Length: 194
Length: 392
Image 1 (cartoon, one colour):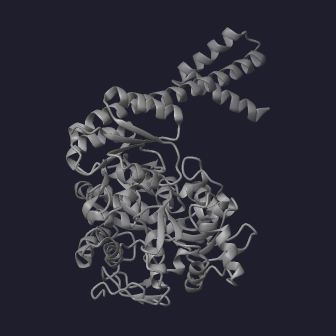
Image 2 (image 1 turned 45 degrees about the vertical axis):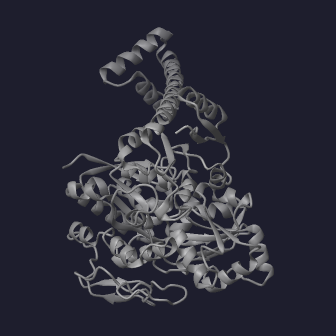
Image 3 (image 1 turned 90 degrees about the vertical axis):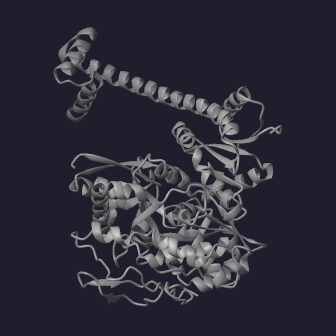
C-alpha cells in the first residue's frame, strides 16, 4: 500500500495533458507520466508498466490499448478496462465523462476512485469548454445572418435598422420560430431571387 | 410502437452502410422506428457504448462478441450477433518499399492469387514481418493469421501483428512502423491515394465468404425488447437488400460520404461499393466481383459454423479449449432470432444453422424455407474445408 500509484495519461494535446496532471496532483501523490505520441503507444505503455492508464474515450488510439489486455494471455490479464465489474457504476460515470481507464487487474476500487474522480472532473470541464465554444460559434453565425437579413430589409423596404429588426422579430413571433431562422430563410430566398 | 428512437453505434467505414441506409432511405421509418446513429472513433468505444447502454445496437467486428463470450478482452457483458451486416470488404496492402522489393523479385500484382501474394510478401520481408490490423479481435487479424500460417509462416510467433486504428494506418506505413496491413475500405484506398502503399489482395482472396461485421445487441436487451429488435432487424435487412442492387451504389456512396457519416469523397467510397479498386498510385485498377456483399447468398444469416470457426481460431491462439470455445460461440450467433424476426420479410432462411465453411466452389442451391436459397463461393485460398461437427 505504501507504493505510489503509477499513472500514464495518454493525451496528444499538451495543454490538456498538463491540466489533467495538475488535477491528479491535487487528488493525491501519484507517479504520473504523460504520453503525447501515437507512435508505438502500446510499447511505450508496456515500458512504463503503470497501474492505471487514462485516455479520452473518443481517442482513436484506444484500440491500440486493447492489445495490452491480451499481452500475456487471457488467463492472467495484466491490463484490462475496469476488469472488475463491481466498479460498474464508476465505469459508467467515467465513460459518460469521456474518460476511459485501463487498470491493472486486482487493483482495489478505493485506490482507483480518487484518480478517476479527479480525471472525471477535468474531463467534464473540457466538455463544457467544447460546448461553450460551439455555442459561441453558433451565436456569431446567427448574428451574421441576422445582420444580412436586416440589411436586405432596410434596402428593400426603406426601413432603418431598428425597424428592420423589429419586423424580423415580429415575423419570428408570429410563426413561432427563432429570429435567426427567419433571417436565414430571408437570406436564402433573397439569394435565389437575385 | 411508432416513434421509438433507437440509438445505434457505428464506426465510419463502408460496411456501416446497412445501418446508415436503413435510416436515410426510410427502411427504419417503414418499421415505425428512427435510428439515432452515433459515430465512434474506435472499436473499443463502440463496444463500450453498447455494453454500458449508451446505444441499443452496434456495427461490430464479427469476432468481438465471440471474443467477449470467451472472456477475452476487457468487458464481459453477453452480446448477441443477430445478423451479419456485411461479408468481405477488407483489403491487404503493403508499403511502397515492400511493393518495390516484391516487384524486383518478379511478383506481378494480380490482386487475386493469395498463395503467390503471400509467398512474395514473406520473401520480401526484412526480419520479422510487421502487419497492422484495426483491432485484436477482427476478421482482419483472423484472415492474416490464417493466410500466413497456411503458407508456413507460424503466426503469431514469426510475425509482429500490431493494432493500428484505420485512420492512422496510412501514417503508420509512412512512418515505417509496419510493412503491410489489412483494413476495411475506404482506408486501403486512402493509403493508395496518399501514395504510401499499394494494394496486394482483397480479403475474399483468402476466404471467399468471410463474415466481416455483425449487428450486435446486448443479449438481455434482445430478450427485453423483442418488438424493437424485430423492427431494427427488418429495417437493416431491407437496407442490405437495397445495397445489394448495383443501381444503388452511386446513391449509397453519396449518402455515406456526408460529413456526419464517413466524411470522405464519394468517389473513394464508390470503389468498394462497385468492387473497382485502384491498387497503386500509378492508377492500376482491378475489378473484384463481390468485393463487399450486403445481401446475396444469404449473406446476413449468422451461421453458427462461422462463429465456431472464429472461436476455434481465437482459442488456438490464446490457449483456450477449442471445443468449449466453439460451443460458447455458437450461442452468440443468433440464428433463432434471425429466423423469428425475418420470417415474413422474404429473407432466405436456410434449413440448417450450420454448414461446412469453405466447401462451395461455385454457387449452389440448398434447402431453405422458401426453397430458393443459393450459397455463393466460400472457398479458403488453401482449399481447406472447416467442418464444425468434426473440426480437427
